[in-house]
Image 1 (cartoon, rainbow, N blue to C red):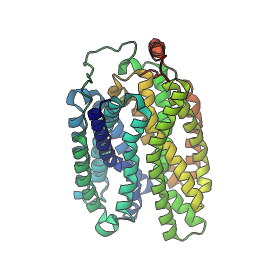
Image 2 (image 1 turned 135 degrees about the horizontal axis):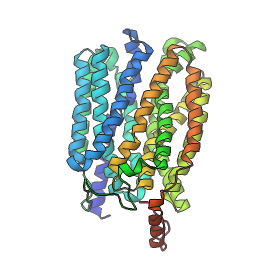
Image 3 (image 1 turned 60 degrees about the vertical axis):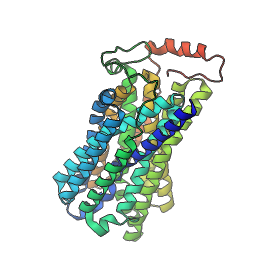
Image 4 (image 1 turned 30 degrees about the vertical axis):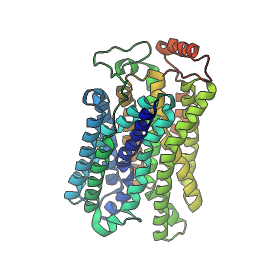
Length: 437
């Protein structure tokens, strides 16, 4: 990459971080849950905007992936920022505490805006840095996890926005910020000069699968199932990360105000390691892939380790959440693994099915996140209302262990094996092989 291209590539990453910082607002929802409960919402009610937002996010992302090469990355990102900001402004203008306006504004409109913008920085970043897909994807989406920490703390202990101005005004402040940050970040969203977008009627080659070809393979469904389970476990934990530890610590004898503050800190720890996990697992998968001379194997091995360890951590969480420092430790571990999903699944999608139709293909893979966004928060809310948090963590923990087995079955489809051999021959004089790129 020339110095000029390298500099622009760095600006692409900077723009991606600004965009994802705003899109990560959906993970900050739990900071609004307790104030809304005080105003009369049930635990289940507080999960609905979060759930609708996640489902809208996933469904709209399928549309965004298909239109990425039609509208272009810059316009698609800008549309997402406007939709996201408008949703929060609408909810805030309606007072912020009414169920339906919040569901529509923060949930439906906000989720749709995130769906329009999310895939763009990933697809653009992979084109600028094709030899570092895991790391670059992780960096590009790290802001999504980091944004949760910033927006949680601004609304809570750092900025005191909810306490000083109320939920409605906080929504409006956030809506304006999200719109501005995404629009600024969109300025750098462009593909490399040599990039040629696929034609709408272009059929998949033996190296690249179109979406309709991909979804007919067992490999797609194995990847989809593993992602759905990982999303279910992680999103349930996010939804309960403030409420459950606060109750558990209070029950163990800690003063309620201190328990609330401790649970809030656990949310921040989760958010920080959620961001770090995106970079960390992306880099780990690149290292394993380099050592194994096969990028796909690096991705799969990382996912097996991540899913298996997540199962153990989630099952253990309700037992360790009654102690402050073990709560922080396991919030970090679960957050780190959850963040890894968003670096590894884009990378394994392109490693398995090719990069030409990645924007479309990852939208279909990401539907798993929408499924997890429905099951996870609602499972946590339903069992939380029954005061049976333990069962919720056990169910999702066991599913995570099963996911480790499922992802181990994924291989490069037969259609792409010839490319695997071709690339190895071409790279025989180099120190490593890039497989299925």
